[in-house]
Image 1: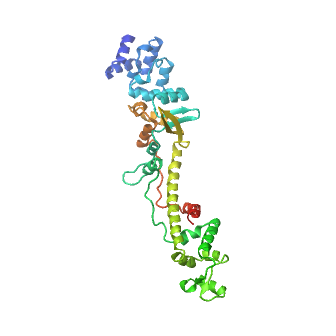
Image 2: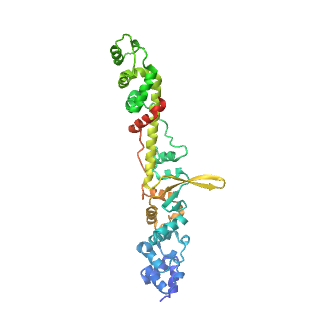
Image 3: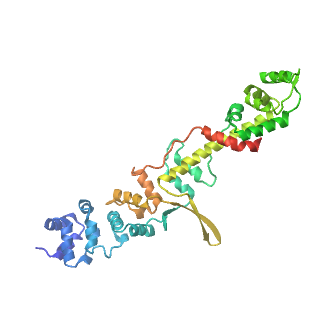
Length: 369
């Protein structure tokens, strides 16, 4: 029978037929390695020569290698690519914190460890857009996210002509405090002045003239202005005439409220989407680089352990390795591409949310009137 040295030589030959000689006698790789360990010859074994199929057939093989001294002098960088993911799985299962620390310190260049967890160091805020779904022929969440995270901010193309009825879309949604402002504006411009009835056709003005016991003229007093505002026909007549300047301001109020509402909704959709993979706001860390001060954006990763383990399990035995990708972002992009995770997705609204428009109308109104 061949000596153990012969089997070790066949083990390292790199030829399938030689490796079969080992298996023919020992049935399993593990049985052969047990004998090697019993003889104290672990240092003569290069585990890179173990075929990938042996790890697939024996999921506990890496644990066996560890327990029997075959990994004592193993250098991750010296391993064959097909073994690297197996090795990292073993390293993490042996000690989660130390395993992830090894990966962060030596492989994923963009992950830093803080006392409260793992933080992604961003080349720029725009990098986060790579976590969103992209479409080839239409505006996608990724496109919108790029704008939100850019220094210039969201640039969706401003909406114009957002209303053709400022009474219904602005005046009717004003809260009590803004109604008081509008009352004051009307009184300052038209209040307690004789107005010729021939210039006004709305029933409100004719009834007002009669109630004041006058002919040809009427006045808008403090007692009348609230009822005037509640009458759409009368207000629309004034907005076309004596209050035309107010009408122009109301158009501006609505236009800005509409655009701010749309922008706010898009921003919220993008930022809320980050919660799928991250658990903090973007943290700008001040760093001194030579004589310049830079602000480096960071964001906390929700579950680095799960993300890494999904990758390692998906690609164990393959040449796709973390050190080839080199970063958390690139790792996640590959997992998006292969369907292991879904990128952040949301429906891009066609129109602004009406409740937000009303909110902004009431916020902006005092600045215009």
